[in-house]
Image: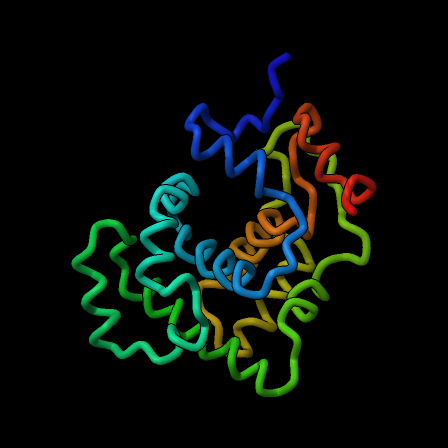
Length: 193
């Protein structure tokens, strides 16, 4: 029996693995949430597969998303990354990763538990949208607009409401698998331990 996947998922093995093993599954690991927030910002204006193919390079360049290490990056270190084609060579996006690490640290210093804080923008029970076709899923919601506003006020970059909604989809705050997708049921709250 062949698995039915969302129609945005191509036959690329990397894309299929991401769809099947990550996208839409509830994520509560602080470092991975930071990584996904940064990667969604890197996607702005690009296809997700472009970012996905560069993810390992980002992990190497950004020390497996060590927030403390990234926060110390200098302008020179960021500029030097522009020479590496394994990254998206956009200084604003690369700088945003450093700025986001600094903003993350500031919130932590205020006593904010970042995992709980980010998840506070999701509805109490994971929303499972009626998605007959991925193009009919919302591009942003009131929750993603609220998250975006709060992140921007805290000093985060590349966190518009559409980016925040893509982040919410990726980390399982909402279930936007297409209705025909076998993973719609697997990602539902009743199937999570």
